[in-house]
Image (cartoon, rainbow, N blue to C red; front, side, top):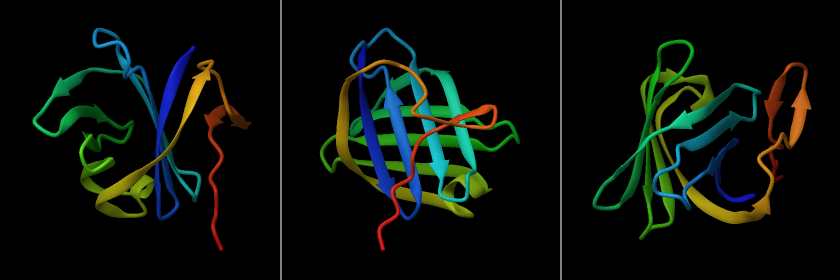
Length: 123
C-alpha cells in the first residue's frame, strides 16, 4: 500500500506512486480527457532545488520531463513535441489535488485492455 499523489488541470490528470521510498522507482499515470494516456511502471527520480524531477519517454518517442515543485504544490510537465496527453501542448503546469492515501497499486477503472483512471469533468 502506498499514497498516490494527484495533479489535475484542463482535462489532464496525473497520478504518481512511490515517492515515499527514496530508493524505489516511481510509477506515473498521465491521462487526458480524450483518452490519450501514458502509463510508466518504473521511472527514476532526480532531486532538484524545487523538488523531484522525473524523465520518461512515451511509446511514440516523445520525451517527458515532470518537475514536482514542493513549495508551489505543482507539477510542470514538459514534452519534446506537442502531445495529445497534454491536450496538444508542449508544457502544462498542474496543481496538486488531494492525495489518495493507503491505496493498493491496482487499476482504478479498466477500459478495454488499458488501465485508466477516472477523469473528473467540472461544468
